[in-house]
Length: 470
Image: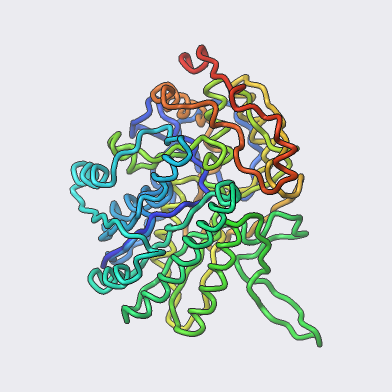
């Protein structure tokens, strides 16, 4: 069987992998896990890239990964290939083009897709095919690809993944809608036109639920309600998006529901939290396989920004009160969750399967306090560029994945977290542009006015910290 991945932009949260050097496989890991974490980091523990879940024996599949060149798509592609699946990566390299647009590259120097797949062939002996294709615009080529490759599953990462970028201006708002919604609709139509029984696995976001105070545990996709007249029902959880990006994921969720009902498509939708970590057991095998590390205000999500700032001796940039609570998952577990979803597809005619793909929840200011304690840097509370609640609670059900064998990595178990980032910063610090650290996208005119005094040129790297890493 063959698996195809399409590159997409996910709310990613690149951070690091703990190890004595930036690329090493001698690692160990704590197996503690839970839904919430106290973030009590007491002693260094190397990050572990060893298997944490019971290995599920599954047949080899052909998988197409849309967005397979991206932050989540690339390590997932390697993970699935490592498990013996036949992988086809599809990507139009739009994320790399946005690097050029923003004038800010990944802190880690990522190689071209051609170099990446060749390096993987050299270290693993396994082939991965790369296809440059725009899922949102090149529909006929997408249908042709499905007919030729006949995938068992298509993993859909091929979406613009940054909430800040989606709110930057009218151009980026329109691009995010056009790219994300059209791409998902094209995939559904292409699956139907191919006349193949394809399992679609989509990487969504916890943001479809919204980040207001829910008043209770957020279930996995569907919620029990009592309708007028006392009628009980189980319906799709109400959507409450906080950006144009999140709105596209809500529209995706409705599209999956329609095409499942109308055409019996088999779909799994994964509502993922903020991703942290950079490398996986596969990407550390060769420097040419290294994953992205985004640190800027648009694509560098909170934990990876804090870790980089701490390693560089830059004050941590907390937005508002830091009372925002978010769900988190390590990039290694992202790849494992995709594998579990592929191995457990819904049957034809079953409703859309929905998983909450997180390991734990944590408040932003608590993460900042942890990183500040480890690094000795100050914490700066900045005006919030986002239109969101200053404080929120977040309790999330994640029992489906844990019941299927996932034993997730947690922040609390990764006590050596800062050591890994230090290694990356020391190796690639010359690639960092500190002027890109502060927020550069604002949700509305009022938020922009409140942030008007932020000065990008004020961000300075502490060279002594950056060099010595202590």
